[in-house]
Amino acid sequence: MKDISKITWIIMISSFLLLTIMIGTTTKLVQKYTYKDAIAVEINSEQIEAGIQLEKESKSADHFTSYKSYPTTSIEAIDESIHKWVKTNENEFLDRMNNLEEEENNLTARYHLDTEVNKLSDDLYSIKLQSEETIDESDEKISVKTFLINVENEELIDLQDIFDNEKFSEKERFLLMAEQLEDEIDYDTWKPALEDINDLEVYIDSNKFIFYFTDDNLIANDDNVLEVPVATAQLADYLTANYYDLFITDEMESEIEQAKIEEQEAKEEEIAGHKYIALTFDDGPMPGSTNRILETLDQYDAKATFFMLGNNVQANPDLAKKVADNGHEIANHSITHADLNKVSAEQVRKEMIDSKKLIENITGKTPTLFRPPYGSKNDAVHEIANETEQSIALWSIDTYDWQHLNPNATFEKVKANVKPGSIILMHDIHQESADALPRVMEFLDEEGYEFVTMTELLPYIEGEGIGPYYGN
Ligand code: NI
Image (cartoon, rainbow, N blue to C red; front, top):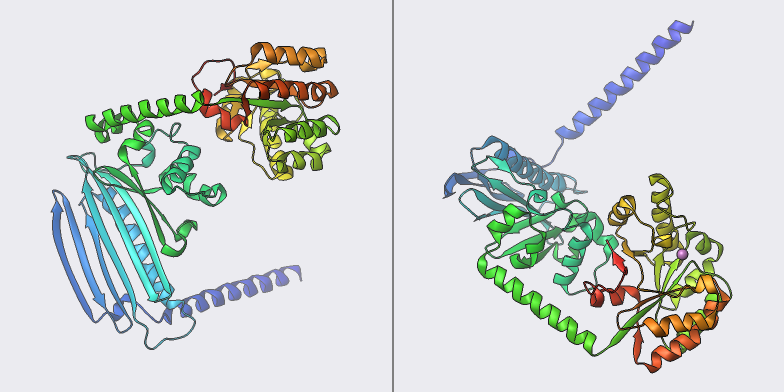
């Protein structure tokens, strides 16, 4: 009895599978459009560079026309990748036609694929394939695919070979795009398109790199494709040594040098006119003392930076949110205030990453600065900071407010040590620190200091060597 039921099951399952396959096959057979429908086909080939042919093919059928041009090198490894992309892209056009809900008698769909090739050296070529698929006027799709080939070594070059992945990090890629677009761009939207350097599409022109973003990564919006040209000289710091020599000319090098000098001068001029300092508060938020500190800051219309502990944020979510809503910078100070030199690497990860997420969830602000408790840091801390896009942020004036709990001593510490660019360390978990703040701020205000957040201050003090303020 048991065996029979087993056989019955096998037959039932097999029949079901067979039926599924048959239905699948039938669906394939009723495809409305195929390239076999083409009534006119024209093919020709043109040599455009030594070793590179451009293949051109035009097809037309009742309801569509198709034109494509694509390169062939007769190097198998290279041609295979390029031709595979062309085939997939072309088939996608057919699929989109075949997926139309109903038969359209006056359909005139169009596929157009163009190729651009730029010779970068005797062996190196940059190639860009761009296709436009128009199913009807309202349904247009642009795809861009780029290749970099070395015909001497017979290989495709990955972008990770050209760019130093550490220097040209995801964060740097994002900042570069934001700078080029002179616009507030949204990190979360851009992240998927930027996270893998090898997924970027870039065509290398004589003096610029052109980055392409299409509909696929939701960035292109109305135009279907967003082109972001970047002057080659601007990429100099990100290139690996070999490619630096190839792409950066002597002329560019002196321009880069000049730009750096000008930037430094502008920075000095900016600092000369202002006495910027950053007030930073650690270990909170704490009801009572943090509220009073917020009130004092408000009286001076000052913005400060709060290095919060995950545990205290969780215990006082409304207060943490209030600090953020008042416009102060929200930064990360670990979950439990562990000495990161004394715990396991796994614990370091938890302290740095979980805390960042928790603070982000509760305050709505993403911390980009991490201050290790006690200033204790090691390789693991640096590594995780890089990985999670947090900069390690220390201080230049320690008030020892937590130790002496004496408002007057806190004031004297600040008075004796402050100078433009100072990062002052206090703790918003102590009443005595809240008590010290009005006098500290009154003094600094009278001395002409301007209060900025730590992130706002950092560009002015980088390289000034005024203390353990900012390590990476
Ligand atoms: Ni602390």
